[in-house]
Image (tube, rainbow, N blue to C red; front, side):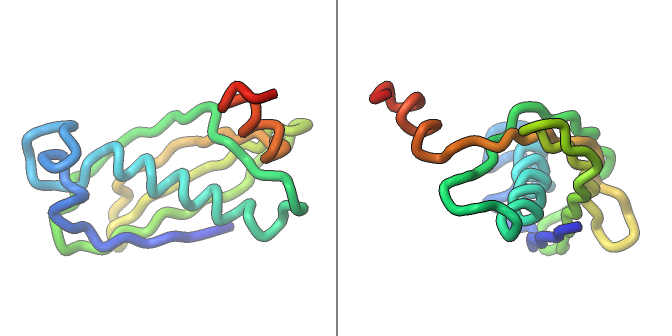
Amino acid sequence: MARVELTVTDADTAQAVGSGDVPVLATPRVLTLAEAATVTATTRRLVPGVTTVGTRVTLEHRAATPVGRRVTAEARLDEVDGRTLRFSVTVRDGSTVVAEGTVERVLVDRQRFLAQALGTS
């Protein structure tokens, strides 16, 4: 299990990121927080030269969070299938579930991945 926190600022709102016109925590920021928790969950366990990349997300954003509130994202590794890692994620504002879903990440060789992405392989 891994956990990351965020205190919501004006820069994190739907208005600021262009995902809506209300001054509450934006869904793209909720997603970023959930993914950050999965990265935190894997970072301590990876061998040098290996990283993970996100490949699939299912997220239900259930509750609005105003500026100034602290949200916490927790990621739990539920399944390892070869190179694929599947996580359950929950984002909370205190006892309120703000969002929950799943995140899938894949183990990759960092240098090979970047070479392919940059077209240098």
